Amino acid sequence: MPRKRRLRKIVAPPGFKGYRPYGHINNNQAVDLHYEEYEAIKLADYDLKNHEEASKLMGISRATFARIYETARRKIAKAMVESSEIKTVFGNAHLDKDWFLCNACHARFNLPDTLSKNCPICNQSDIEQIIQ
Image 1 (cartoon, helix red, strand yellow):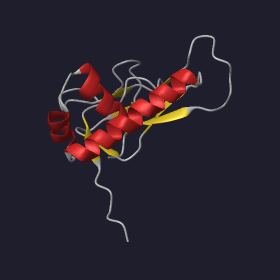
Image 2 (cartoon, one colour; image 1 turned 45 degrees about the vertical axis):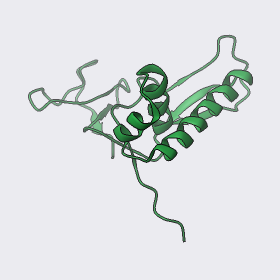
Image 3 (cartoon, rainbow, N blue to C red; image 1 turned 90 degrees about the vertical axis):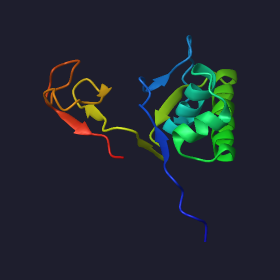
């Protein structure tokens, strides 16, 4: 029987739900990019961390980070070549802090203890905590 998968730590969820290519022909073949794959791309390519540093930040081994990073790169390449939409999905991750989702405007944010429990974007109180 396989070992239970260890959750990958991410600092913040992506600030988008997905990307669609300009002039997109709707082929209904969206590519699902998991939060941990987004985090791997962000750490390696945007923050310019090496694989060792990035794997420590995510709480996984270097080899596991390399596999996640490679999968993310392949998914993004596939979406670009096939003109497919990229959608972000939760995947096998847990958030570094408590994050919330506004049901009114769909914004994702974390709340410091000193602030009210309203969405900082639309000021609605219809929010829910994103399960870790």
